[in-house]
Image (cartoon, rainbow, N blue to C red; front, side, top):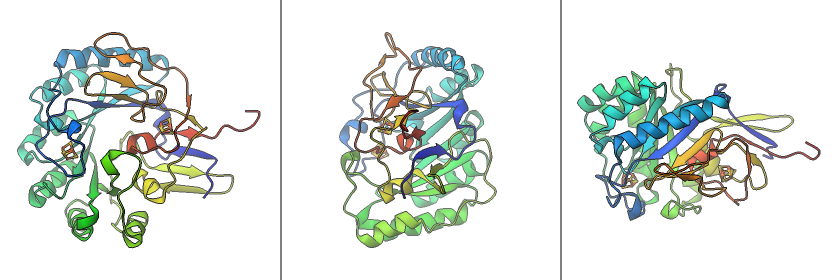
Length: 315
Ligand code: SF4
Ligand code: SF4
């Protein structure tokens, strides 16, 4: 497939900026494939007024670009942050839509309350630590209330078990989208050494699609277009197919996507292309234009889901 243009399937994509916001490095899991710096607890959860103040700055900037702000908090494990409900309440009040990426380890009672404040959630199933019954109960509860995406991290040495769990979760949660997420070594650009059969399964994605999906999600699948064809793929499948290469293309990172690290540094995307834009505790120069991608590959799922356009001659 030779794509000349890549777009989000979600027709609302041009109206939003997704802010991938890392809150600290505290986590209750120790996944073998996760770099310690992401879960060692060295960076604690931030003061909640710093978050709400910068969220206001974001809404003012992106309003001028005709975009609304959707903040997706991640960690570490954000459900361990005691001030999270207060943060979400404040953000809801200033018109910011909120989502989370979580390992789903808190129980259904916790999620039942939090779901009122969330637009969507991404639950990542980590087979080395997740309790399947608890994860499934949480996923079932959330997917009946809000847009829910479940990523199954496909550990090569327990690939069959991961796949079985994906099917078990599909049965319990017909309304959730489910992706088989290929793992990258040290969360870098190189995939773990999967067998050809394992790669073929992740590319094909045999888990049946969601039924009766709750509408209103901000980020959809990706459309890979050329002059004749349009192919719709999830970011995980783009990664499994190795189609994640857009060096020299015009990319919307910074317009559709912003990434904030646990230290408060702000970048256009998780790829950090274009360099640091500042820190939320001092000054940040927020982008107003696209950027030309200089990277040989685009590896994080949120980055992959950002619109890219090949620059055509004379355009
Ligand atoms: S749950 Fe996430 S942050 Fe925690 S150890 Fe696993 S991969 Fe790392
Ligand atoms: S690596 Fe960054 S700049 Fe390049 S295509 Fe991906 S998101 Fe865009």
